[in-house]
Length: 181
Image (cartoon, rainbow, N blue to C red):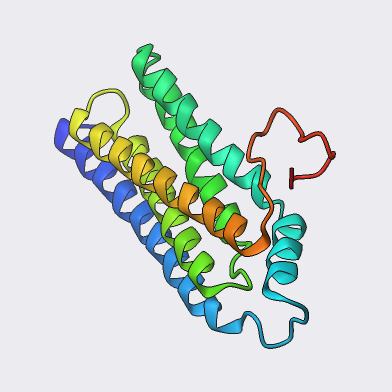
């Protein structure tokens, strides 16, 4: 396979992954209109039920751990194979988190939809970059950073609605044994 063939193959894979990520984001926005009509209870109750029922805290913790792992393999120069593996895990985990949308709160759904789309985009870019394409790695890092801010905003939105904190770590449970502290 010539250099040009390899490059075309990688660009084709990148284009395919970008289409998948954009489809996920579009699907989340489409599904937003389905939430709320058949739900009962206060907004706080509905959001709290959604958080617990979907495993939201674990999803956020997993995405943050994925991002940290990607930074580690890049900074420790583990090579393209390790980078691509961890980046594809991020894409998979972002897609799985996105499948839990919509939330009972349209603003929360919007924050999470954008965050998950950015996580997917970050994973796609670093997958395509491997260890060699510093520009794509930088774009991936920027997407992960922007996604993390949106995830923080989403957690703050949940706290504002429910009045309860949300533990988003994947390694410990809050003292109550649940995801709300």
